[in-house]
Image (cartoon, rainbow, N blue to C red; front, side, top):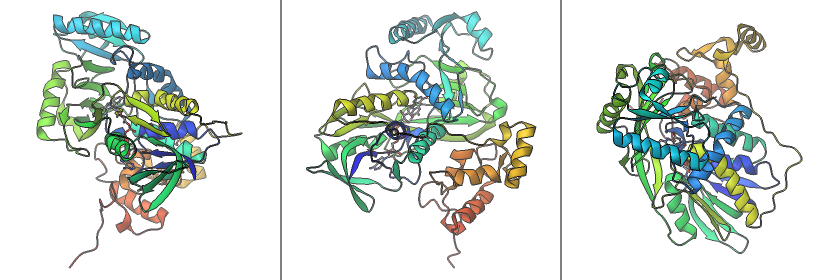
Length: 471
Ligand SMILES: Cc1cc2nc3c(=O)[nH]c(=O)nc-3n(C[C@H](O)[C@H](O)[C@H](O)COP(=O)(O)OP(=O)(O)OC[C@H]3O[C@@H](n4cnc5c(N)ncnc54)[C@H](O)[C@@H]3O)c2cc1C
């Protein structure tokens, strides 16, 4: 019998698992895919929003603002790329200037520090490539960019190091209430847990309905992106937003934490799991983005992708506990930015519901990741001397060595696919998008895992790369 079963290992499930891993609890995380961060967490804008956007008094406002400092601390402790570059919301008319003023007032009420309204001249001085018809801008110095999937992985990895059990390819198909708690059918197994925490993202309504009367629906909405080469990465220095609308925060232009330029997203109703970045989605993104930054060179595009927002029939996050079952649902944007605060809130909710949380005598709360290309010459020489595999570059675009790939494979959550390696150490994230290093990553994975190359998938289970001839 587990004390707590967490369903879903996106950034929310990972954050909660990480927090609970410090206590004397038997915790299991059930994830239907073959890796952590396979849902919305791997395809978003990667912004730690400052917190002026959510309506005053909402859980979203409170948890977003609370999380800004928590996220920064966590990224530092767990060695997750994080850059506090600040954000601008541009206005292009008197009406939008009014909107920017309302966002400022809301931000002040929400407790966002350092907000300023900039004149056109001030905004242009900070961000020379913005359009000439900008009327004013809201500047939020606490906004940041991170690597969202590494953030979730680092949290989940630390939780596993501290004794949390992670079961991958364990899709929850039914949940029955028992005298002692819940019996959960996940993959081929049935497990028992006293408490269940539903962090199933776009499928959180399905999980909720397995236990409690129907209360909300997830309304999936797709957002597509351009990811441009690093040669475009300095086109802006800040996250450049437009005024938000009813359907979202609008199309943004921003440097990524890795030095690329990200442009998007649109917002279009879609089916759960529809991550296609279609021609119409992308045409809209281009049209809107050049309104903010006319000189973007879209020929430098290296990848398009789309993520699915788990919007819901409620305006706010749905975080609620009843009879031992806790929904953490409808975690749309700013869900990534709020994850640390959400986990803290859920911990408090468990305590309020009678769960006794006693801290372990010792637990791990730090993590490091070798990053060869960021090392000094001396550090490189030293690591290559210790392990010559750090002297063998596999991904030439991103300068990722065989040593880093092997380090990723030997971590507590073992990657089994080419994209799982990419998420851990960035091999294949550069201009050629794995065209050169992909086959070598397959070889290294097969060798280290002791399996055949045919067993290595590209991404989700069944996305095979190497197959036997069928003739
Ligand atoms: C286009 C877009 C842009 C965004 N930009 C930002 C941003 O810049 N900043 C920000 O703060 N937020 C942003 N967000 C929102 C943010 O990405 C989400 O709030 C966050 O990732 C939600 O995390 P999650 O863990 O709830 O969901 P997910 O990451 O989707 O995780 C849910 C997990 O549950 C698993 N699961 C589902 N059903 C089952 C089942 N039956 N059994 C077991 N496992 C199951 C899934 O496989 C998945 O891994 C954006 C979202 C999108 C789509």
